[in-house]
Length: 139
Image 1 (cartoon, rainbow, N blue to C red):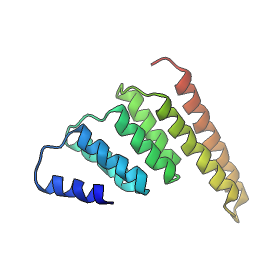
Image 2 (image 1 turned 90 degrees about the vertical axis):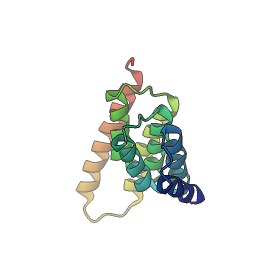
Image 3 (image 1 turned 30 degrees about the vertical axis):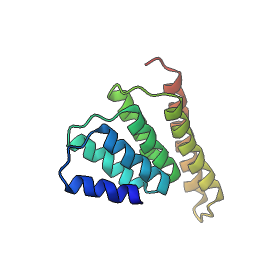
Image 4 (image 1 turned 180 degrees about the vertical axis):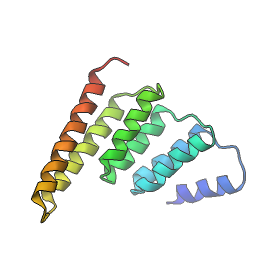
C-alpha cells in the first residue's frame, strides 16, 4: 500500500516515469491484491509510450491470477505475443495458475444455473489449452 502511495507522489511530482517505476508499482498491486490498479497501470504505460517488459506482464498476470480474472491474464499473454515481449516460465505458470484458480472457483461456487457453470468450465479449459499451446510454440 505504501509503495502505491509513493508511486502517486512520484507521478504528482512530474518525475519522468519509466518501465522500472511502473514495474515496481504493478508488483506492489500484485502483492496487495489490487488487480484492477495493476491493469490500469499497464494501460497508463501504453498511454505514456513506455514499453512494458517481461517483468511488467509477469506482475500484471500474477495480479490477475490472484484476482481470479483469468480472461485478463490471458489477454496480457496475447498482448505479450503480439508485442514481441519475451515470455518465460514465470509468465506461463502465472497464466496457467489464473485459469486453474478460476476453474476451482467455479467448482466451489454454488450456482443455481448449473449449465452456465459447465459452459464456463469448457471455455476456461479451452483458454488453458491455448496457453499451453502458446507455451510449446517457438517464439
